[in-house]
Length: 130
Image (tube, rainbow, N blue to C red; front, side, top):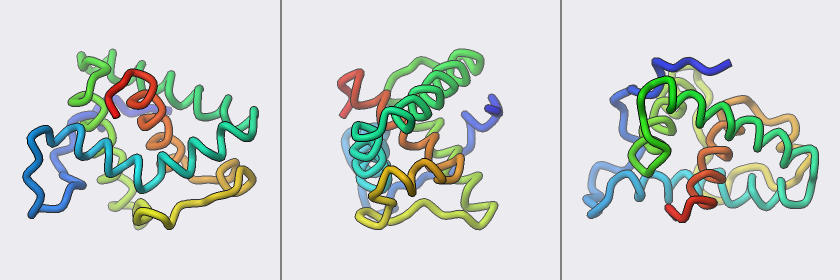
């Protein structure tokens, strides 16, 4: 279930010393490095996992729509920041780059927040934002 209020969490997952020209795309790139590459690679090898990621992507789009946000870099980055912030509050941090699950079996059992972030990465990749 999606909480439409999470789309506005004011927490940055990007390192403070980084000042990119486009902070939203930088954050999406970071999420791709943390969970997107491994999650999407696993999903492409497992039809069931790909279906789950696709369902999460539909929920992300719905949440952005209901929050009055566009499915663009800023909207996706805001949503991703809210998921990261909620996960951190629950003691479930997002893995560092190269530390995410690699097998489809592990991703099938992944926690909700990781699947949502993979879905954000899938949307960003499919719309040419990354």
